[in-house]
Image 1 (cartoon, rainbow, N blue to C red):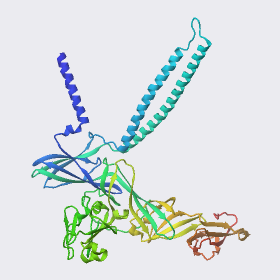
Image 2: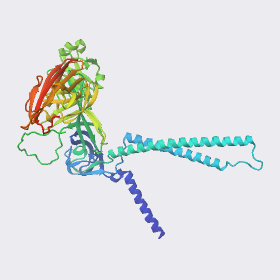
Image 3: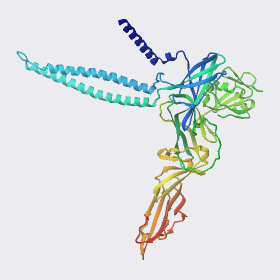
Image 4: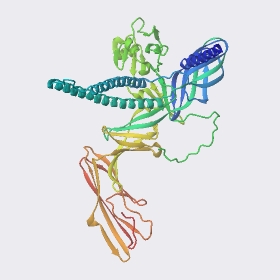
Length: 617
């Protein structure tokens, strides 16, 4: 009986150990399966959602087999999942699952926080030991403070004993206070670090997905797979920096995207594209219907070939020399970087001259350039090279120009229904849900500036920028930071849907344009005529330019309009303003020289029954 119980106990222990081994070594649970990782190659992020493209390679046996492809997002739209493969392999079925047993990957930042907490806890343990030791010494002193004996102590001995007791007690209590203060500070720091760790772990996904494929292969060998799918765990929205250096300069529009993703995968060195559209969620073929135009409410790599010149794109694993192969007549490449240009005067062994951004360079330096950073490459042969660079270019010339700002790395594809920004720089986007800024375009837009003021509503002068031809800028509604002459003065909102042929942007207030509106008492009056009351209102508007350059000013004010036959209103003076009789708005347009002051007067009368009140103020 005892032996049976012992065997049952051993079976339970073995089963428990087996579960532990599966939990801590998940590969053992699928060790019989053919499992390969995938590599995320590109991500097209829509305003809501993203399309991810992975590649993978696996060795398959002949006939039917099962393959597991890992490192897939944990949020996959299965209706838009596509798997393609080479070697005439047939995909019979695809199943998606989440890898809960995969060991969690800790980001370097979280690991650093965890290490800090561990170090502080060790110091707290050491402080606790020191604190207990000092308290025990105090208890020992207190237990042995009785003095005396048969013959007592002499005065000198008593004084020495008291001094020792006092000194030791003060020393120990001071140490305990220091330990207590240090312990409290470290506990508070540990609490803050742990809060930050929880915040990071909350945003970081702890699981990724995998695909289980049932395949049929006509022959064994290595097969390449391409996996693409839609995920809802990514998005972006636009925002801008509007920079004005001088009122005569073009408006600088820094077009940015704020991107975030929680797909369960850290995007590392991916080809990133941003689209202004929403992903197609449907699986049915579209049916065209009548397209009616109506008003809407506003909502808050190229190849160019010409005679003697070619502009090439480069792949990440190519050198400049390899890229030139076959791109121009008479170009030959020996080895990895030796280039020869054959022509009438270049037969022989003389290598071509390399020009990098207008400066002579070497083949070694050219081949150290990241191909993604090259804007164009021009091949010159024979007389074309010698005319420009002299006899040193007898072997021809290879002229390389690199990209020098973000505009060179971002290409804009304007489609019928959306705009796509393709970014040539490989991007890293962590799966922590934090917003990451991506610069899309740095635009120098032609802009006419004018100041605007409506002193009846606000006695401040606002700088307005009017951008013609804004349709080509591909702007979306979004918030904008306003930076005037290097100073961030506030925020505005770009709303392209609310404009016609010109995009009008409010670029903030300027205190150096002074606008005052004051009532002229001597020309304002109140009279009673029988049963009526007549009031005359006269105001003087003063504008002054305290800037060092001349400015354009658009000034508006208004007089009231009567909608009741018992109320009579008359405009008496307008100082040459353009008057809109339907709205009562008066408009002045002017150019103010530096230091210039102008004054305008507006006067109107209102007559109404004296026993009634109106909203005249």
